[in-house]
Amino acid sequence: MKVEKYHLKSGTEFTRFEFISEGPKGAIRKLIEFQNTNSPNVFNLAFGDYNSETQEIDDLSVSNNGDTEKVLGTVIAAVYAFFNEYPNTYVYATGSTNARTRLYRMGITKFYDQMKKDFYLYGQIGDDFVEFEIGVEYEGFLAQRKF
Image (cartoon, rainbow, N blue to C red; front, side):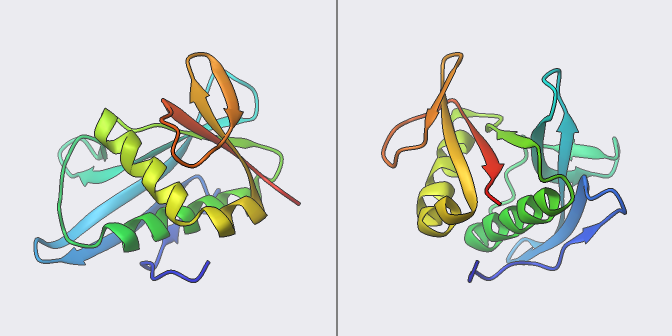
């Protein structure tokens, strides 16, 4: 994708990524994790600021560092890297708040033309997953890489 993004660092398993958001609020360490779920071959995409006290992702923090598009581009780059290692999986994502879920939908919409070439995209409505459509509100999102 042709979007500005941060440099990603990853472990050898490509399930945990980190990068530094740089902006008016300073350098903020961000984490992306692809976590196992109860469903076979479905991974949850967890994303947020690194909490140095718990050494975990804080998915409720609001950093407002003025680089939302670059951060979203970086998360998408991590999704591509994850699928390169785990091609026969699905990635599920939902926001920790309704506002964040809306932000994810806006990000998918912004990059939709490129993403639909590379991914099967679904939106969650209740317990069902339907083909993603622009302008529809969803509770979560599911992606599978096209090969």
